[in-house]
Image (cartoon, rainbow, N blue to C red; front, side, top):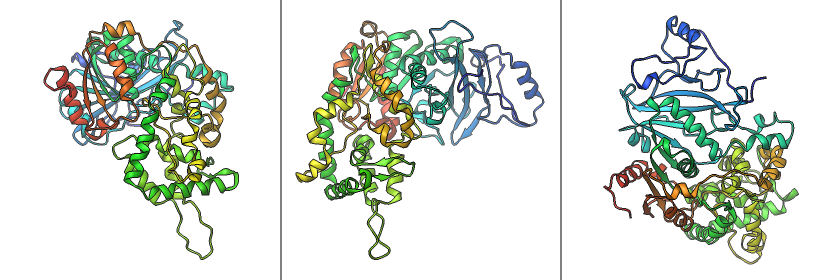
Length: 519
């Protein structure tokens, strides 16, 4: 039986897989393949150029299948798919496999140059890499001297994606959890090493840049596979590395920060105090304590407070949140018609949270802090301890602004158990979520002794006002990473790589070359 998510071979007239055979040291990295005779036949007898994005194969472990090059403005791209073990601890060749997708990017005309490689690790957990439509930002800067590799972390994008529908194939929550336990940073690093040894000529070490959760993964990489690293760049992604589960410490340390961000938001948009209070009262007085969402879930007052997930932590988050509230009510077109929350607002709310398309985030977010201990719904427990400040109805009765939740913490956007009751896409995953929250036997994600003896050059952008990665906790971790060089700045928030990518990357590379100041 085919493993869940294992790719199929898709062939159409004049479309073919292009597996490269070349004298170039870069293009000689492909493993021998039982598909090669078929592929070469299709290649030799095709009358068209390669079409990107159609290369899928059912292949043995170690297989790499590569598409032809395609273009977006000022960049050249091609895709690779690797068949990797679900569980790297199993030696049986017949063990279950998954597909891992990477996209390779170079500047125009650099396709066959022997450039150093840079692997980009996306934030998350549970989110795929960006899909470049044109040159710009940090990618343009990186392509000046690197061959960039964008990795869809396992379970996301085109790497055996775990969606609400695909996960429904499991007949029990226990079997789903047994599968999901393989989708953390330790195995993301194993996938990266698998790819490096087959993609990079002579398996040379590569540079890794990790944004947010991608930075957490990069520190795991430093812990367990430093031989694969040439240098590491961290942007808003230095994790807490203590043993056990650090989630409680993370939430507690960031408690004051979420309150301060709420204060800043309401100082910026004081008119939203009354608007949010009005929405909360409307929801609380509605039948069932909320209103239906387009997907079938329900928007409640505590669900509304989750808009702090992104609204309080990025450079343009305040504005986006405010503009969203501008469209909250339908106009009254017919005299006497009841007041209603607009479909525009409800639809924007669901898109804001991304739970329907990226459920892996909601399932796995607290596990990123666990090593040999359970999270036991850490965010929920810490919020309960501070419920008086975050009780929306109590705030209204006392004449206080309703506080948004979501970013108490180090990168982790707060997920509560009741979300699996109120979000339609998450309802089928409720039992699995509870099992994951109580799971204790999580393997290590960091090796402190190895990190203290680190010899790999590391540079980190530390954002002083970062709502996702708490500054205090970052400064507790960094002394434990040997040789790390810090750029501490309040010029950017957590979205610095998106907002000023070229500048951020240039500064970090300058740190490693000794050309940039630390502050």
